[in-house]
Image (cartoon, rainbow over all chains, first blue to last red; front, side, top):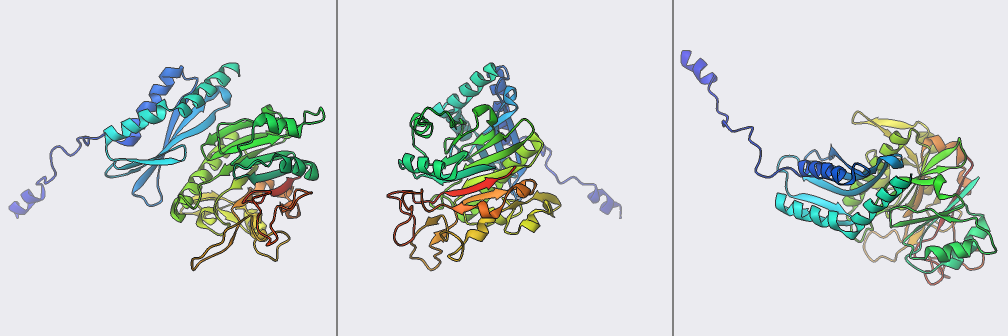
Length: 135
Length: 270
């Protein structure tokens, strides 16, 4: 009986259970980049990241939107991402009508850099900044 | 009474047809998809004779162009993406609606499931914008690239657009513990050859087992709050610009004079 009680208390879980996975999640990376945008525009144009579980339950739908507070909170959805809830990657990205898939954090960051540096993104942000300043 | 026209131009030069339609129907708002018309040409044509009735109402959604009798301050975008633009359309100091216009992905590039997911995202964007602005007097118009009976239009998590005005007037229904707001979709009544106009807005000759031939890709959806302002008899699939038929002899869209899509026209008495 004593042996049974001792076995019942035995911890079979690994000691490093709460360690972060080696890759950061797409949601985390997008939230960081949203903060960076506000810093660059003095919050004239901000970015907001919204996430909700997809209907299938196994993925998370993420929207990365530009917001111009001085324009009545005008929003532009710049990109969408769908990440697996458990495995984090591959993440599917949609930007201006085209889709890409990133298999790990480095790939995701490369795509994001391309999206953020594209002429389209720069034009939208500079339009919003100009309109906000004249509002 | 405000008269709206939506037309997917397939990037064809149809300036004079638009001009004739504006005059024939006294259009107030012209929403175009796949338009490569130059803004200054459109304004010069619609405002010829020293008038300055029409304005270009700019936005960041490049798939949609809006020209209207409303100055830009009364047609401000409040939410946009590459697919959709949502405008706050002010008729007067105390009366405004939300005009959402979209050109969703083609069936050539997206599966049915992907189209439905995208429709769900668009539906969320509309609902979120309504919450932010504080009302849901919304019309949603565009080339949705889906038929009224597809999941993207009907499903509660998607556009939730019903064929029955009385059901839409219930406002919303609870599915999976969430309130899902209705749209009313009057395009159901326009399907088929017993309707008052052409059987659809787009025609494609198909060789597979399942062939609809006619599709109702171009649609207007109306939230219950605006339904008292909408009379179904004002909704038309337009088949002539008043001078020239937009149809071939076979009765299908003639893209040599119009586009591969037919325009839709409707009025709001709000």
